[in-house]
Length: 140
Image (cartoon, rainbow, N blue to C red; front, side, top):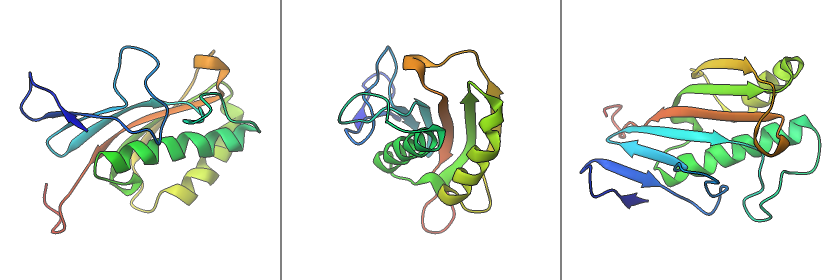
């Protein structure tokens, strides 16, 4: 992570364990205990191409990418309070639920799912979210 000079409490989060930003955005931005995670598509961070496989493979890669960014910011997916899911085919929504149940524990984050016409690089799924990191005592 690197500290921004124009905001004393704003930290840009960047990790090589998730795809580098392919535009004018950061992988995440942390302000105090709140982290805003940018959308992740199923891009392999090493090969820099979409993962091979089906929609389930893409969902898992997206969640692995989000997990890597969350970790670099000092948290885990368990700290997610809001997740947005973008799908090019809403018929895949039951599979998203199934895979997310493996990555998240109750209490689950709030969530929205949106059908879209297209996603970057031909991806079938993209997710972003907001994370709040608590200390060991449950305080911010």
